Length: 123
Picture (cartoon, rainbow, N blue to C red):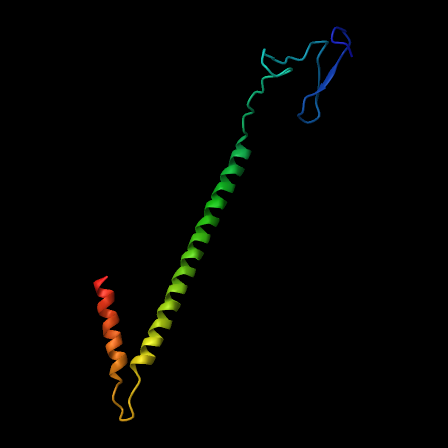
């Protein structure tokens, strides 16, 4: 349809299927001289309150998920540290509880334990 004609033109408003009568008026589009041909100014659409609420909800959900992952990670680390501690303690108890034929403790392992303690204390 030519823009100069006076015939009725209809445009879909976008709300509830309502059509508006334009009466041969031109659609307003701003264009400025720029390096790109046919460049038009795009106006920023305002976010609706619903969209903002949805974004806020998603952000809170992500934060909660991150916190849960951090807590899970910390629990896993403490569990592994406790397991290593128990293994080391079991090995020490096994070596320190060795006895001779007469029932006396084996001094070799006791001396090694004391030496390790002293060396760790100096560091």
